[in-house]
Image (cartoon, rainbow, N blue to C red; front, side, top):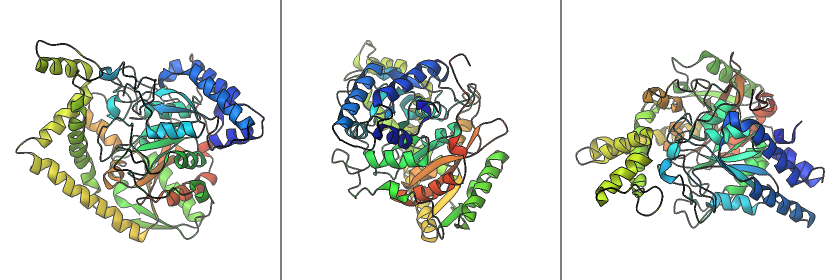
Length: 489
């Protein structure tokens, strides 16, 4: 096995045993990036010199007897999370030359744990998209089929993990942006409970929905990374002040007696039959492992999409008002202050960001606030209530992550509604503030990965990880790697 194909926990064993060094591991991953990223285009910014310096520091720390869960492990950061001294563009021209003076709390915790930062991964502009085609710079390609999207908005992180261009990555999930690309790229993507991971230093899209998550090759790695970045942060007023458990303790493989809910609303007409078949087969595996499978109902599921596309754009229109050409970022000078605003935002924002700002501004405008935004917030409460009642009956909920496998680049760019429907199974979790994880459960006839979603209640990550790990260990989907070998193939 190549070093870049290792999982975090496999690499850690080799590092602890002295069989490899962090510098060797990091160099192998950098070489992999140089070999394949011209084809995949997962990264916006690479920092190889800094990464090797951090790797050598990790080797020195290990020789001194220090230990940490991620010591010497090369990881990537989605380019919407602030990194001191490294450009943070949010995939937008308006922040093309922005270099933050500080690290996001999640990044600072990775560094404190000894992780090696390889660079920043591509994203839909301001995390607004389901395919990473909305990046202002270039689209990212799916390592399983370079003609297809990796999903979005954390498509760069997902593609990097799948292609062996890092051992783990941070993404963000506002409506499915960790889980959906994880499903498309055949990896594990975990969206924690809202407030479980600090949002300080995460450039805001929709503040009541955004959550930093982890993207890894298997469930064990997800548990390790979550344990490092989770926890209370006084710099984030929405951060939950509750203890962080040892998430790896959930990885027992024993799910006998656990109750697994299957929502009938998540198996809908029009979804790809191979996706439904793969998830139904996975449910049989869980039953064979001793879980009790129960059909449940989440009756307000149909409202999640319209509710999300009122609340998220409304919050985006407020959050993105700060990009005015005055304080930081792009500045296009106009004939007056107002014209400078218009010119800067007109040149700096892409079409999807403009679309969502206009949607959100309209929903918040006089005469429409009560009819749209306020009503959406009320329905959001109903959606949360559906999950609250469901989790009184079951420990976790299992459903498809996406209705289809990865679609072709360019296939949906001119049809925003079809693009939005890519997230139809993931949006509800963000509206309810609960946790969930996507993991591979099969492949379609085109050789494209299929993802299964395991959802848990607020702070229910232990149950989610327990079920996901048991399924993963009973199957071999997570061991498969995409066939991409070099930039020319």
